[in-house]
Amino acid sequence: MKPRVAVFASGNGSNFEALARACASGEVDAEIAVCITDKPGAYVVTRARNLGIPSEEFRPKDFGSKLEYERAVLDALARHDVDFICLAGYMRLIGAVLLDAYRERIINIHPSLLPSFKGAHAIRDAFDYGVRITGVTVHYVDESLDGGKILAQAPVENSETDTLDSLETKIHACEHKLYPRALQMALDNLKKQQHL
Ligand code: GRF
Image (cartoon, rainbow, N blue to C red):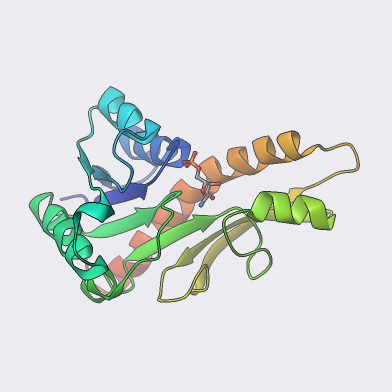
């Protein structure tokens, strides 16, 4: 059976869609089992519906604590028989409940060459700093913000003529290519360790 992947997203979901299409085409040997969002009604839910992928929508405020919220998410992951998690624009730190259950099985995409430009405004921060080369990183997730072991990176040039908009467009195009490749790498690594 193919590994079953959950994608966590809080907004637009273009990386969710890139991953779903790469799995559907066979570029990645996995199945996107479910989309998990902490923002009910986010556009990613529409994308999931259009692709025939189930969504689970959670409102963290509805739970007494982060622990209870993550336990509810964990139950949903169990219902969908999820083996692996991709974070794709999920604007929330992963806590102990999910980390303990999916240790070494959660990856995230970040729009800079880590460890430079951590945080929520990486593309703008790199543009404002004036770096000529920025890029995209896919890394394993641990307790830290954008800090886990790096799995894959790709460079993107910020040329003299780029604007913040054109740089964003290039970064997103790069993400949509890199994330499926990185997911396949992570799954291959797991298979080698015979965990899947
Ligand atoms: C991406 O730039 C990703 O690197 C960052 O959040 C953004 C999500 O975009 N973590 P989308 O929702 O996948 O379109």
